[in-house]
Length: 382
Length: 185
Image: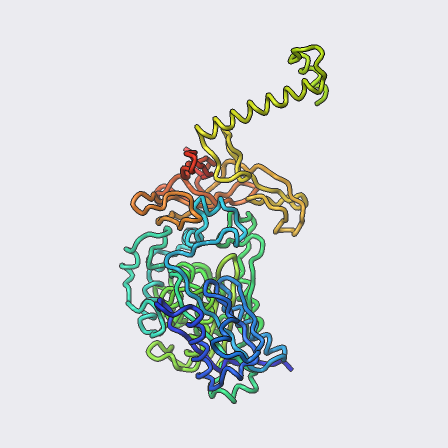
C-alpha cells in the first residue's frame, strides 16, 4: 500500500525586510506559526528538513525551538532548497520511517542583485571579473531570444509585473504591496534589456514552515488536509540553456523545468488541464511567461494572448502567482519554494481572503527554478 | 634537439676549450635572461590578460581556449576534463573559432558588484555593456561581453568576431584585458 502524504500545518514569517530579526529567527517564527496551525507542539515533530542560503544552518534552530533530539537534516540546493526540503519530508513519510515532520526554509540576503560566489559555482575568477557573473543577464538573454522566437511583447512583460504587484497589494505577507501600472513598469530603469527594474524580483527575507503527515492520520490535526500528490526536483541535461553558463552546447534540450513538470504530472496521475491554479517561478516577468509553457500549461507563444486577455489574473481562467509571486514577495532563497506551497494551501483551503481564487479550486501547482539549472515542482490536491 | 645544439653551439664558443655542456648552459641562461627582460618590459608597457588559459594572448588573432571530447567531439568552453554529453573523461585543448553569429544578447545596465567584478563600478562613470552568446559553427555557443551596448545595433543572427578589450588597470599600472565579441563590419 502506498502511503499518501498530507500538509496539515502552515506557517510563514512576513517576506520583505524585517530589521532586527535574523533570518534564523524568521524561520523559527514560521515554525511556531505552523505548529499552531496544526495544533501540535515542537515535541511532536519526529523529523525535520530545512535550509537557508545565507542565514545559517537550519538545524541550529533547535536550540531556540527545543532540544528534543529529533532527526534534523540541513538541505542546501540553491533556489530549490525549500523544494528539496519538502521533497525530502514527503519521501521520508512515504517510506514509512516517520509519520509527522516539518519542512522549513528561511533567508536574509544583502540588498541588490545576488553576489555570485564564482568559485562556489565552479566558475573561474575571470568570469566574475569580466562582468559575466550576474543571474540577471541570463534572464535578460533568455527572454530576449524567446520574444524573438515566439512574438512575446514588452507590454506582456509589464502586465505580468502589474498583476504581481496588484496581487501583492492584497497579500498581507507580501513585501511589495503598492500597485504599479504597466506604464510605470515599462518606464522604470532598464536593468538588463529587455527587463526593467520593476520586472525583476529582489533578494529579500522571510521564512516558511510546512508540517506534513501520513494522510491517514491527517484528521488528527486538521479538518482540511491538503494532499501532496507530487514533489519532484530535477537538474539540467546536456544542451539546456541555464543561468551562469560560460558556454552552452549547440544541441538543444528544453531544460529541467520541462523534465520536472512531466515527472510531477506522471506521479500525480494528472495533466496540465487538471490544474486550477499555479505558482510559477517569476524571478522576472519573462520567467513567468516562459515557465507557463515549459510546465505544459500552454504552447510557446500562446502566453501573449493569455496575458493580454487577463487569463492569468486571480479571476481569470488560469490564475498564476496569486500571492504576487517572487516579484511582490522578493526571493529569500531558502523560503521561496515553500512560500508557493503555503499560498496554494491557503487557496485550496479557501483561506486566501480578498485574493481567494473563486469557484473552490481543487488542484494547485508550484514550480521553482534557479542556479545552476535546477527545477522543483509540486502538485497539491484538496 | 641535440643536433640543433651541435650546429649552433660552435658559433657561440669563445674559448675552444669550453665543453659542449658549458656552451649549452651559456646559451640557455642568455636566452632566459633576454626573455625575462622582454616580458618585464612588455608587462610594464602593455596589457595583461584577466586570466591565463582562457584566450590566447598576446596575439594578432586571439582565440578562446576550449576543450574537445576525444570520444564524442563535443566542444566545451572553458576547457574541462570531463564531457557533459557522453560522460567521457578524456578531453584535449582546442582553439575555438573567432567568428560566429549572435544567438541572444542583453545589456548590463547597472554596475555589477565588486568583487567579483574588476571593471568600473562607479555609478557616475559606469558604462553599460552588452553581453551575449555567440554561436561558433560546429563548436559551441560562448558567453561574452559585446563591444556594442545599443539595442538598436544588436540583432540576433548577426555576424560577430572575437576581440580583446580593456577591463581595468591593475595595481602595477598594467591594463587588464578580457575577451569580447564585436559585430563584423
